[in-house]
Picture 1: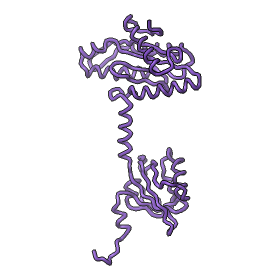
Picture 2 (picture 1 turned 135 degrees about the vertical axis):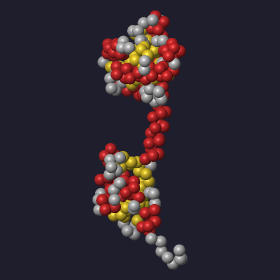
Picture 3 (picture 1 turned 120 degrees about the vertical axis):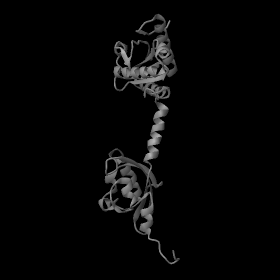
Picture 4 (picture 1 turned 180 degrees about the horizontal axis):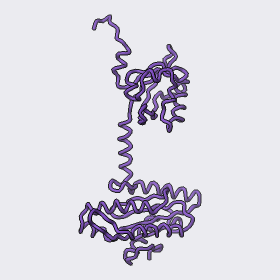
Length: 292
């Protein structure tokens, strides 16, 4: 290339993976580069002259409207923000925007970087860190987090809730007799039955091994706790059919009521655990409130 040869700016923009957009003071697209169609699915002809806010994912419309308004008015200190957009094909994409104001032309120059893949991976890692890999239920970490929130809410609003600590009787024998594959399938089946026994806003989680914890939030009385506990027991009366293996499985359940049996997560879980263990010693499938 000769020194006096000018570079065609639009050709350079068309080679970029990020989309470059020019938006006027009214928030209307004036120009979009070729990458805009690759990221959002819309051609330049479809968006130029249209409002930028019209293409934002509905769930992010309010916060994005505020961000765009601040950017256009020059009030936003940090000219970078993230939001979600709805592609022409209906897919939601995550976008990181970098925006600069052109004093000379009185427009905003915005660069859109597609971070969807990164966001999906972050969400997956976050989910895996807080859920049991086998059953998909909340794991111990998430259970403790939710229990703390329930305690705070119950203390503030003077409400009542219960914990059900559940241990599966004879689970080790299932593993020893039929193998861990059947044992894993049994745990998954149990997780589904436990989830079917509670209300949609209750929490069913796996503490580890064959131990499960149910948080029954916002109860009217301990009678409601017993009613739900009986639903759990009813779910276990049906035979578990796993491949060609039929299993009759029963749980041992211990209950702790807040604030009667404890006011901290440690106290409540310890109480429910002791109640469950007492049941297991007695060979019962019902509830023990007071560990002796």
